[in-house]
Image (cartoon, rainbow, N blue to C red; front, top):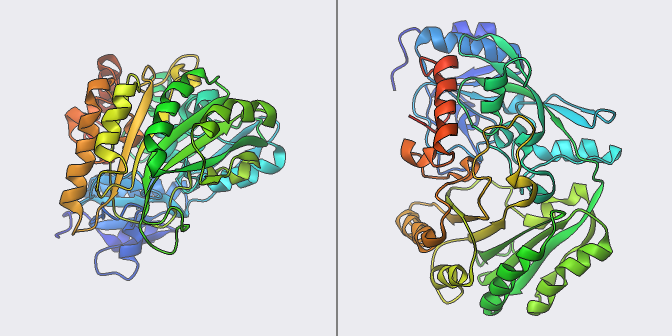
Length: 457
């Protein structure tokens, strides 16, 4: 791949404390590596900045050289292969401070949620992390951020105080609801590619522990449990967030024997409150069928990863999603018909997340988070190794298509997956919000220097 005419790697290296790699360098491949190996990055240069000043220098150099700029930290949510341009991998930017008096934290671009969880816990505080604490703070939050306490506290983007942004001219801008109202609105939930966010300040919740965990049922009880879930969730107060998944784990020793090589049902449950009320609310699902494993109880928030038990090792994966208006008995039957235990499909997980509660309400002044009026989110994930690509793509889309009669019409941008066409991406917001986001992009990045995988145009 030829380099842009104005790109000078040695000149850029001289300006940074961090590292710069080009194809053929030792370290280039690891600098490009993201969590989802289905989306390998192949830029002309990969930059690992140590500081905000490094990011500013990299952006200025890319602009002068005519290189598009891509960015990731963990690469969990990067939606397609970054080809050409400059990749800014912020994983080395690890500054984190917790302010227990303000109940807030300030995290640099490479910080992952587990670090925030661990450093907030001694103060009796918890962040609004995602189901996997291994995900980066900033990318998750810019896309909204729906986590295990979502119905209680809303999206992570609803609790942002300020954002430090490197703009398209390489300058640094502090963005708040007061200083740059429209830009702040767009960055909080709009996944808006107008610059590189190098730090973010956000609120923490006064939650030292929750009543939560996982309950696993046999695939033989899938219909009974799924139908019980469909009725039960409507009785839950905002203090409780629950999702359910049809789970197919490979037949390998890394998984527990009862789940290995079989279809099971995984209930994920978090109640923000005491054990007595949490247990009482969960009891109808516990009675629906005999659990293979019931791991729910009072738990310190530092153990929140045990609820969803998301994988931590990089892997190639196909994923797709669909917001649903409702999850009716007919919708449950449709899901079981294409992803139930009697069906042989190469899909690891088909998950239903219950929305509503605080997720349906935005902060004062609003933000760009879409899909607040949906009832549920359907997510589908499958392995994306070459022998399985075609089958996984077909099976995953078949699951999504089966639930379209109950579709809300939109998506959540953090769950956009492989649907990266401008039309598909645009469905993450209503028409008014989308128009505002496009205007912000034109105002702050008129030359489209930044390309973060999703195009709204």
